[in-house]
Length: 88
Image (cartoon, rainbow, N blue to C red; front, top):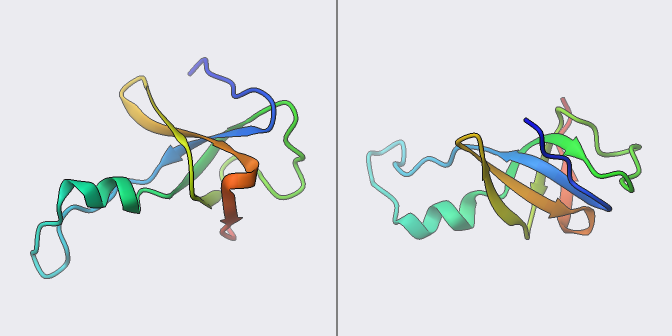
């Protein structure tokens, strides 16, 4: 991949969102947009302080710019919109 976020932004590979519950109920398409708020950090902008955000960590975020790179869904997120990171 040849995309690098700039400034205080992070590139996150979004997790796949299940559209079917364990009980077999299909969820509406709007559920995908609302629920897709976490994923793996794959690149950091040049102004991101690297003490919390690490490449490979899973992060939860609230707002993003949705992009498709090489057929995969990514989110470009300002670090202020990241709610937190999960332990590895």
